[in-house]
Length: 102
Image (cartoon, rainbow, N blue to C red):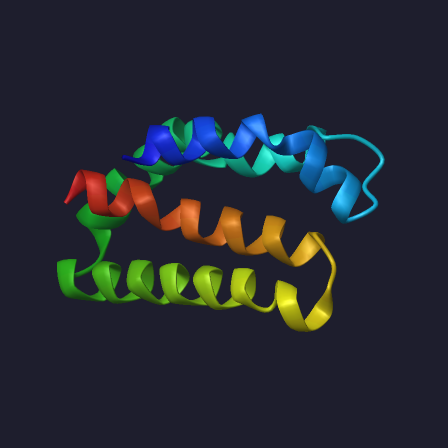
């Protein structure tokens, strides 16, 4: 499911870059590549976190990152800037390895 969303997102990168007056579609494509880029380093970090902290605390932090990322992405309609989408995407992508490793 996530890969379908990523592929669908990259096909409209040029249109989104034009809509938000971005210099290139690379910024849009970075949002679709956030999860694969962050998967390996954050999975290693998640393994270390699971060894050091309680399981419930790590899941709470991951859920908080997920919600903050989702809310930031929804503020694009208010702020009308694409950087908020990038920050929200990377925050929500940071929590994915925790859920995959649990």
